[in-house]
Image (cartoon, rainbow, N blue to C red; front, side, top):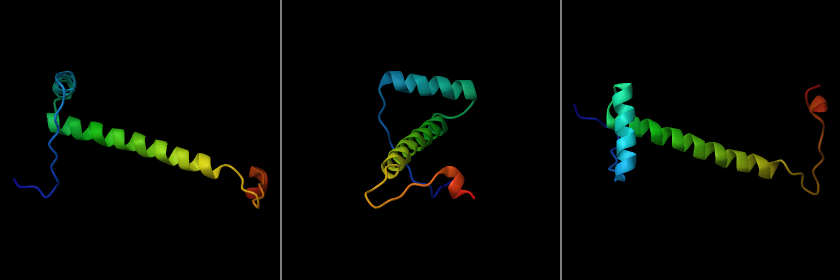
Length: 75
């Protein structure tokens, strides 16, 4: 059955391939599904790191900014 989803060819070192192969056998899934899930997990981790860094930048007050307490903000 043809698919409209994009495809990606990846070259792995033998150890990574064997690890993915073991995960696929253990979970009763295909190599491509395991690889897809691992890539999606890695992208989420990368995105979390990006947004944590952005939040840290915004967490510092500027010259003309005034901070209020949590209690003041939610009253």
